[in-house]
Length: 118
Image (cartoon, rainbow, N blue to C red):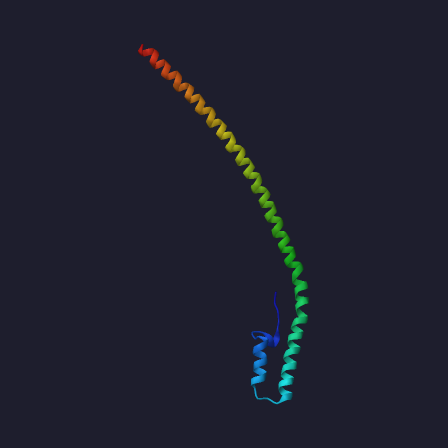
């Protein structure tokens, strides 16, 4: 958002006052310079609400669009996480079933080996 502060750009209020007070000018010249500087500052302040009101809706629209995009992305990731959790649970059940089948097969193999030796 571009702003224009005129004579105030890059200066603080105190440095401007110190500049006016330290310069050996006549009273009318320093008063004129101070009035001009204050007028420029006032003009800059009056421009700020205008600039803000023209920039604010655009910025708000961009922020809303970004929030909507992030919300959609969050929903997608939550769905993907749910699917992954379901797949993991299924794989765990299958692995437990496979271990049980393997244990039974090993017991049967051991039984057959013992019966052969007798």
